[in-house]
Image (cartoon, rainbow, N blue to C red):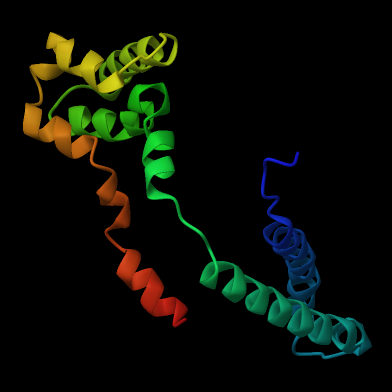
Length: 167
């Protein structure tokens, strides 16, 4: 599809991750006989270790380049977060209701009802549905609700992640 930017390089890394994971089984099967170190270990390690090293090196270089050249569109991201009226924030609302004393089953039922209504209504708005639901608003106030719908909470540890990347 010409209107898309196919994530070929990301897909390649994802595919190679399967190869690396497949070697985990081989490595784990070597563990019970570490003390014996027979030929069954070294025969697979001669293939596995160079293969894993080369593959991982390539994947890391590829990901460094992908992340370094990543184009981010914050307006589109915010738009996508709010598709279907912001139902992506339903888990946060659910957890807040449980924290405030509502049973998980009851909270789930209330949140699900409002989320489905937003999802299945043209231009539905999950947040407005919650605000209009007195059964929910008896447990939370407007400030708490605003915090539930604040997408920046997902960025709290972003600096920690970037520091670990050391790009």
